[in-house]
Amino acid sequence: MDLVCPKCGSKVNELIECDNCGSIGCIRCVRKSYGKWICFKCETPEKEYSEKRMDEEERITEAFSSLFGT
Image: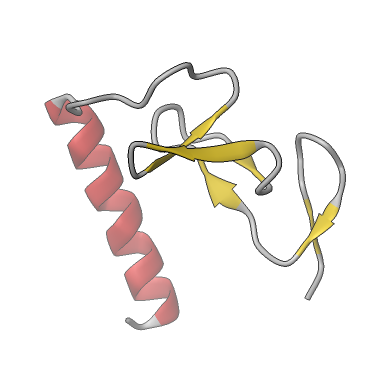
């Protein structure tokens, strides 16, 4: 299944989410730095997430788990 990158418009097999801001992009638009995926508008990955950010990520993870049954 071909997906289209919302940032550059190229067709890709998978999209990656930025660990800092949550934006979505292809491998050309999102790079890996210090073991985390970050987009080019974020200069460095966040070292620690705030409590609110952790709760939001857990909620999203649970939603995907229930959606795909994993």
